[in-house]
Each structure stands twice: as structure tokens, then as C-alpha cells.
Image 1 (cartoon, rainbow, N blue to C red):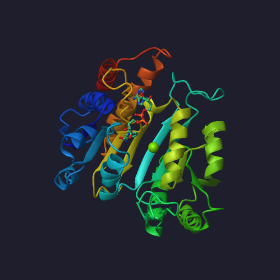
Image 2 (image 1 turned 60 degrees about the vertical axis):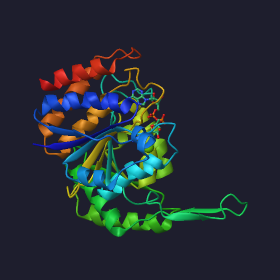
Image 3 (image 1 turned 45 degrees about the vertical axis):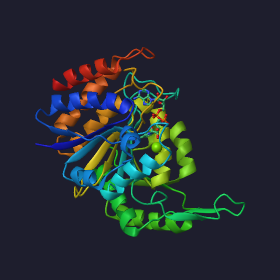
Image 4 (image 1 turned 90 degrees about the horizontal axis):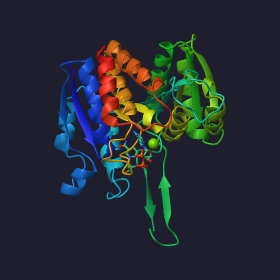
Length: 343
Ligand code: NAI
Ligand code: MG
């Protein structure tokens, strides 16, 4: 039976993860879940972010379900770098998977887009680019201050994430992969990405390919999101584009993600895209859909596609029955989703 580590985290993280666990228990009875206390609360209490012993324990699980970490009391970067990015790098989670669907019943801020028309997945590189921490600064707090932040791109790292994108496209109906970069300006890394893309594309003659500059993609995600199927892109571009994709397909309360090590050498991590939402924490009004959909991605990754399907069916039914703008109760939504998913 699957062994899952649960990091509920802070704020609404704990509220939405509780619902995701109900749903997991409903579709995969007997799933073993171990809770880990990490995040702002622990940091404020003990000064610890991610002790090595906890990292080693997490490594022994099949997957990690994470809520959200963060609180205004923690300086920026401490948890992002020390916990989230450390896990991504330590567990070689090089595929940051972020699907966006416009579910029936969900309103998009885009007037011309109908439910079902947006169904795309961004495969964002997760371990390289501008997120490695390469760089430094000199003459801090003087007028001569210099800061560099370097983007690292390896052929190995770029090619493997592109391979994953093509493999995903092969399993989808439209079989299309869009490479997004800025090859006209970032010519060093852009050329590496473009050549790796061409090489992998040549092995997949049945997959349609296209290339777009990131600024154009930002525009098309708003004007024609229907055109995308699988999008593969670098770490920073993917971070930004997936917020746009989430915004046009029902918002942050629905956006799920997975930080995946496709080789399964390490556990992959599944989490809603949203944060701990201190503004609504403790009120029981957070939408658990993103966390539940993330649990669905977890099930898919662990080889339970049927259970994953029941999770998306439950979310689809829940969203279709919603009255736009009506208040929701986190617990009640979780109960309905679990009941529906259980069948
Ligand atoms: P946020 O995603 O927590 O909240 C942004 C806005 O969206 C807020 O108004 C919030 O109420 C709303 N919102 C978010 N999730 C919602 C849900 N499930 N249902 C209904 N409304 C929802 O982002 P923010 O405010 O920038 O960050 C708050 C804290 O979370 C910070 O400490 C930040 O560092 C952390 N954070 C953690 C992440 C993670 O653990 N992966 C990701 C993003 C932020
Ligand atoms: Mg982000």
C-alpha cells in the first residue's frame, strides 16, 4: 500500500489538506499517511526549516502531499528556498506539472471561452534555470552594489524535461507540444532548448510542435488559451505562465500541481499552487478543490489512474453544482467530494 508523507503546513494549508486526505481515504482505503510538522509554525517555534533527519524520512515515502507553507512573520525566502526548493532539488523533482482546465460550472474572466475549451498542461522545468541560487552580490548596501542571478541550463536537464512533455503529449488526444522560451534574446540557453526540443521532436513524428516566445505566450494564454495542449518551458517562464493559466481557468482555488521525479528514484510532491492565505486562514472558507486535484495527480503518479479519475469526476460534479459567488465551507466541500469519489 502507498506510503504518503503529509506536510499540511500553515494557514489554509492544514484546512485544505484535511479535505484532500478524506478524498484519498475514500478512493484508496488503507493508504498510509504520516504527518510532518514543517512550515512557518515550526520555524517560529524551533528555528528549524527542514532538518536533515526529516529529509531522510521523507525520502522513504512514495509521495508527499503538501498544503502550503508561509506566514508574514517569516522573512521571505526562508521557507521557499529552505523547504520547497530544497525538496525539489534534493528529490530531483525536475518536472513541475501544472494542469489547467476550465471545468463546467466555473467562470473564466475571459468572455469568449466556454467550459471545456481550456485543457492544457504546463511542464515547467523544476531544478535549473534561474532557481538554482547561482549568483552573488558585492558591495551590498553601497551605491556600487552588484547582484547577479545566473540561469543554469544543462543539456541533460533540458532534454529530460522535454522528453517528459512529449511522453505526456503522446498520452493526450491532441498530441501537441509548445516550446516556450525567449530564444531571440536569451540566445545561449535558448539555442540549447531549441536544439534539444528539435532532437526530441524528431523521435515523435506523431506529435505536433510549435515554438513561441514567452511574451507572445503570455498574450495567447489570455486571448486564445484553447490553442495549448502541452507547454514545456524553463523554470521562471513556467512559474509566471502558470499563474496566468490558473487565472483564466477558474483561479487559484482550483490550480493543482505536482513536483515530479519521473524516474521514481525519489518521492514526488503534490500541492495546490496557492499559498497559506493568511487573510482567510482559520475561517473554514478556503476552496479545497486545488488540494484535492493535487491528490488526484498524486494518485495518477502512483499508478492509480482509476482512483485519480474518480477524484476528477467528484471535482467536476462539485464545480458544476456551484452557484457562482456563493460562499463555501471547506469541510462541507471536502465531505461532498469524498462521498462522491467513494462512489
Ligand atoms: P496565497 O495563494 O496564499 O493567497 C492569495 C489570495 O488568494 C488570497 O486573497 C487568498 O485568500 C486567496 N486564496 C488562495 N488560496 C485560496 C483557496 N484555496 N480558496 C480561496 N481563496 C484562496 O498567496 P499570498 O497571499 O501571496 O501568500 C501567502 C503566504 O503563502 C505567503 O507566506 C507565501 O510565501 C506563501 N506561499 C506558499 C506557497 C507554497 O507553500 N507552495 C505558494 C505561494 C505562497
Ligand atoms: Mg508561483
